[in-house]
Image (cartoon, rainbow, N blue to C red; front, side, top):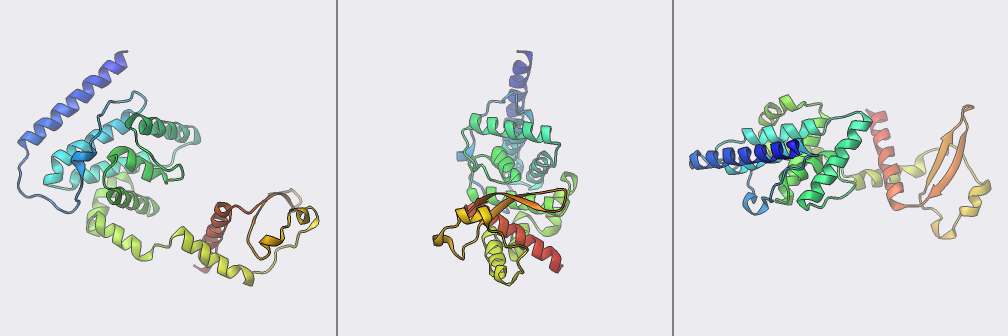
Length: 257
């Protein structure tokens, strides 16, 4: 009970601070680098005891939209840095707790998110809410690019500024970006030229279907101590085949590097 009361008090203090900052903030020198639809996207915030970090980041986001947004992007970069830190690699048990925390937060706020969305995309959605989808996509892309390049939360702001802002990071990423679909298609085009690792029949013949001649499928196998592979299952799921082809593309790129 004491924790709930404390959380409520902290939330009220945060909103009082944000309100005071808004009343005293100058109305000139408006930065137009990142446009938003903040006003209509602000939810009714009730701090969930199970997600104090998400609530803290959300409060910072609200403060940015009502104050610092008008004069500088620095506070935005600070919020994004918090998102990057929240999405860092964790031990399995902690990662599961984080996933649970995000799910509870989405339910509390009434947000919907795809189950296969990247972790940082889900974190950005939790913190920024139901705002312009393009803005959510841009912030998510910037954070995933930073993470891929090994940028830490403490260096994120400087990294973004060196790149010329979040939009410039997005554009530079787009120039070399290859979609999963394109990766799968490129890998698929090379399959016929690859040598056969093995030709299996036996029980697999029972799963053969004339309608799928020439089509890709995925075989699930277990490697044995003697170096052999025991094939356990076959699937023609489009999602599984696409994932396998995308993985093959990555292997081919590494081999060519």
